[in-house]
Length: 215
Image (tube, rainbow, N blue to C red; front, side, top):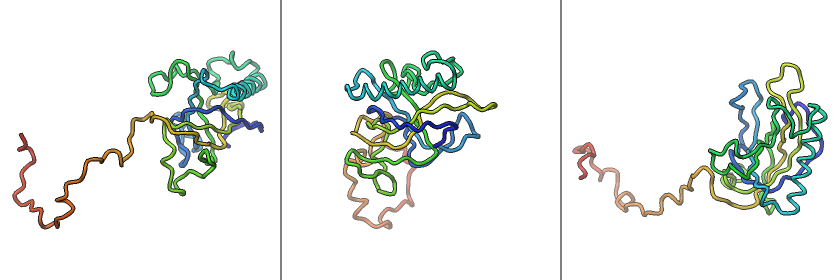
């Protein structure tokens, strides 16, 4: 894990909608060029849709955030000053992005170690398994995380509490947040058979026009 200070308690999150997945190749944060590369994702929750069980899971995470905030920063989580990052944020802060907004909460889940990613049937997902495309912005997942504090050392860039990522389980598909479509869906129209039946020599470009003569 990438944390300066790591807590041992592991939590399972409520189901979230995935945004900005980066689970196979570690990348550096654009905010800190000196930071070590990390894997991660942004998790978007809609607490109003939580099941009773998910409400319990959420409460456990919130209590841990508060406990670590009090221990390391001397203040309740909800009362942390603006210069201390809270880990879980109001979705209104990114209301201009698809999937965020009123009624949502989000958190960036990160790690220096590549997380395990599985299906709901516990089958591995990843490029080495030929199914990396199963993970995309908009699919629904849950994850195992821990709560940690950072920036406690003098001279650290930024400080706060955050959620570290262990593993991810995809729960179900959802509408893509990036509006991308699958290549197979873009080419439903049949290819002109001339391109399949003729040789290259049959296409003589010696008297080619500039392609602007279509009216």
